[in-house]
Structures are given as structure tokens and as C-alpha cells.
View 1 (cartoon, helix red, strand yellow):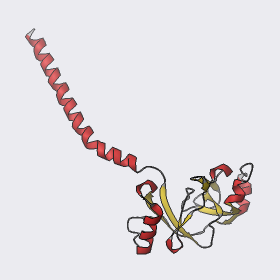
View 2 (cartoon, rainbow, N blue to C red; view 1 turned 60 degrees about the vertical axis):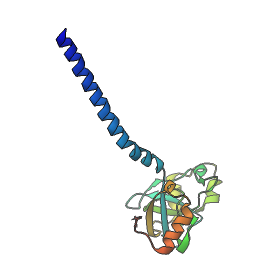
View 3 (cartoon, rainbow, N blue to C red; view 1 turned 135 degrees about the vertical axis):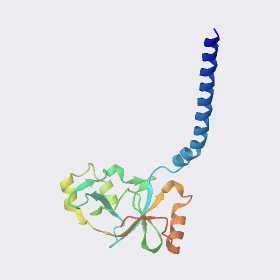
View 4 (cartoon, one colour; view 1 turned 30 degrees about the vertical axis):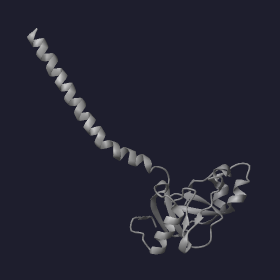
Length: 171
């Protein structure tokens, strides 16, 4: 009976220590977890192009720029209820609203024309519409869009100040 009581006490103490240790680890991890949840979603990508492609539909090419690997359906060209054209920023920068990257190419068709299509064109048709497979002069990843209270104003301020130190240059 005495051995059973000692075993019960030992197991109880072990459980209490484990729970207490686990609770401490959880408390330390919680701020990091909630912080990462607060900054999820798309990145703020700003860029400049060689020509004015503002109204033209972007597609994503492979690294070699020989094949289209991503393109929108006509119904996918809306952002916050309007055509997903990029937002114009200071010093001719544009803020992406489509999810482009450094392998972007532009088609000869506007957002409006593309959105009015009944069905998504085949990849071979889209390839024929490409007008520039290397349109970017510069591109930055400026972090998560949700981390900005007013992303356009804040990005414009950083651009005007030439403060690109916290941005990741993609091109």
C-alpha cells in the first residue's frame, strides 16, 4: 500500500511539473503566434516598368520566360470590387493588385477587355498576346500588405524618402 501511495504521488508530481512547464512554453509562444497571424496575406509588391502597362493584363512566365505558368480567369481580375489594375504610387512606382512576381509578362489586352471575355483564353492564345516578357526595371517586396495601416500613403512616403532598406529587392 505504501509503494502504491508513493507511485501515485510520483506520478501526480510528474504530471503537475509537465503541465506547468507546458503552460510556460505556451505563454511564451502565444505572442509570436498571434503576431504571425496578424500579418498574413499577400505581400505589397511595388515595381516600375519600361513602358506604361498600367491597363494591361499580367501573366506569369517560367524562369526562362518561354512558357506561361499562371494567368487569370476573366472573373479573377477584380480587387476590392474594381478592376485589379495596380495602384499608382510616387515616382512612377506601381503597387501590384494581381499577385505578380519578377517573371511577369504583359498581354496586349486591357483589364476591361479581358474581364468582358466569356471564357478564359487557351494558353497558346495568351502567348500570342504577350507584348513584353521582360517589362520590369525594378521590383520590391515591401512585406505584408496587412501590416500597413494605409499602404498607399505609407509606401509613397518611403518611396519619396528613398527608404528601401526594409524591402527585399526582387529585380
